Image (cartoon, rainbow, N blue to C red; front, side, top):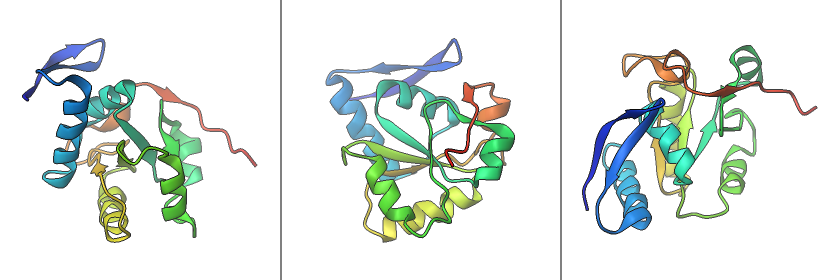
Length: 153
């Protein structure tokens, strides 16, 4: 199967998926996680929409309050003592990849490695982060959909 980025449609990556459809797309994403292990924010948005990833925002609550979170993201503070268990609970289907995003890609890469070491498979990093990095402009500057975060406490 071949996946090729064709362009953008309304801010969403348009992918051409060959024979095999969604199952092959999931397989290709698993291969991405094991080889390069990264997605751009646009690719992450498309994968969220397709149900192929769960995006976990690992920043702190004060950061979520200041900027909001990516639409479709699950906020789980990486400093939680039960972080690994919370990540496992956020993914009821282990075949769905987990993509991690932080502010600028540093914490997500470190957490990517820690989750792999904890035996959690199919992890992907979004190295641009929410605010941008050397990898690219980030989720917010790419004008991707955001939602306000409200403290549940």
